[in-house]
Image 1 (cartoon, rainbow, N blue to C red):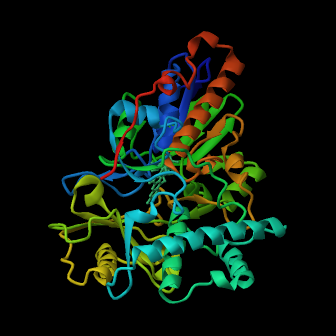
Image 2 (image 1 turned 30 degrees about the vertical axis):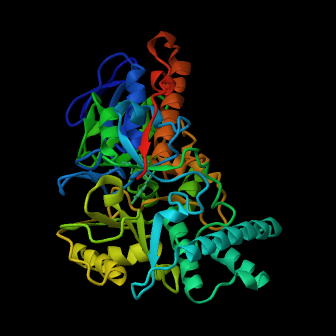
Amino acid sequence: MLCYVSYFPIALCYGNVSSVQERSPSVIVIGGGMAGIAAARALQDASFQVVLLESRERIGGRIHTDYSFGFPVDLGASWLHGVSKENPLASVIGRLGLPLYRTSGDNSVLYDHDLESYALFDMDGNQVPQELVTKVGEVFETILEETNKVRNEFSEDMSIQRGLSIVFERKPELRLEGLSHKVLQWYLCRMEGWFAADSDTISLNGWDQEVLLPGGHGLMVRGYLPVINTLAKGLDIRLGHRVTNVVRRYNGVKVTVENGKTFIADAAIVAVPLGVLKAKRISFEPKLPDWKEAAIAELGVGLENKIILHFENVFWPNVEFLGVVADTSYGCSYFLNLHKAARHPVLVYMPSGRLAKDIEKMSDEAAADFAFVQLKKILPDASSPIQYLVSRWGSDINSLGSYSYDQVGKPHELYERLRVPVDNLFFAGEATSMSYPGSVHGAYSTGMMAAEDCRMRVLERYGELDLFQPVMGEMASLTIPLQISRM
Ligand SMILES: Cc1cc2nc3c(=O)[nH]c(=O)nc-3n(C[C@H](O)[C@H](O)[C@H](O)COP(=O)(O)OP(=O)(O)OC[C@H]3O[C@@H](n4cnc5c(N)ncnc54)[C@H](O)[C@@H]3O)c2cc1C
């Protein structure tokens, strides 16, 4: 195979090696989720030649809007966390005029739900009185404040579960019995859902380190895909290109995909999920430094899935969320009512942690049945769904997990270590965001950061000042109000 590398180390190659031939700086973006698309968009707008390699036959990654029901439903992300101009995605969503449905304001004990927005039921289908839900919610907040004191006293980190049991030992009056205990377990279940992990694995030191943007939480009523599609317009995206090897040298990078095809450029942005890096599905030459490999190994990846049930008609109460309380958080369950937000006869069951792992072992049909059995606990006369969709973020080789979280005993700085570039390799993705891990806006902002770092490195090396527009240009300055409502 012949390969001739031109002056601006952009390759002109033969055989099965692809080339990018003009004398402007070039970059290969690996992964077409929000982070990769944001980085590619920004660098293309800054006059780089950009090729984006995406393993799936679609873009979006953990943004996956499905239209098979005849309307959009999201199998991955569906909320904008922080409906305000402080959100780095606000200008894009605002410009598109996409409607949002508010499910909670700021300071909700469970982040994206308000206490009054859901109806909880016991296993016999009896609704839990709303006063009890509110009262237990307040106790849960008190318990979390007490765990704060615990972590200040202990030098060593511990799990949230251990922190809770120390609080119960010290303040037995906070230990609830009977139905109240079950409601408390439901709050814990929702907290575990936020982190996509069980309370015995989540770090007490790290669980509240992310920055919560103001403006509450809004559901993307028409799905998240339009945002991705808009940012991706005009980019050179190669679908079905699974990267297996990345070689970095002083004067450029060489990226190989599964079928042996090779791409060469000045720099690469690695925007694949943490789960993919953990599983070493991409090999790096020379190998990544030890501190980077340690960050990849030590940061946690959790699991949350969606089982989306489409019914002939609506037979459930007109609340935003329906929940079933149980003796343990594992036994609790939770449905988002898409009829309230988007007028579609759809309920979305969202298991996380060990429960989600157990359900992923089932067939789609068995998983949908499992969700339906949970619903029948609330509504014994529920009619069967006419269609269903089941996500498998844990076993999908393109994600190998849902999103990152702080594991017990590991510092929050791991996110930053994951982001820090290695020579001409730049890293982006939700797991590289110290401030907004596990979110779409976090992924977006790290894509922008990686693009800016990459642009600066090329500028420094080649002094091509006139070539480039700043990456954080026009979009950030536009302030079109977001359209959010609640019924
Ligand atoms: C069920 C669920 C619910 C969620 N809910 C929300 C929510 O409501 N709000 C919110 O803000 N966030 C939510 N999130 C998190 C959010 O979806 C992610 O943080 C964000 O979309 C991640 O974007 P990313 O670009 O970092 O990664 P991804 O979107 O995963 O993109 C990475 C891309 O890399 C590709 N890839 C993988 N391996 C290779 C390879 N070898 N070669 C080439 N390409 C490869 C993948 O196919 C993928 O397209 C949710 C996530 C899940 C799973």
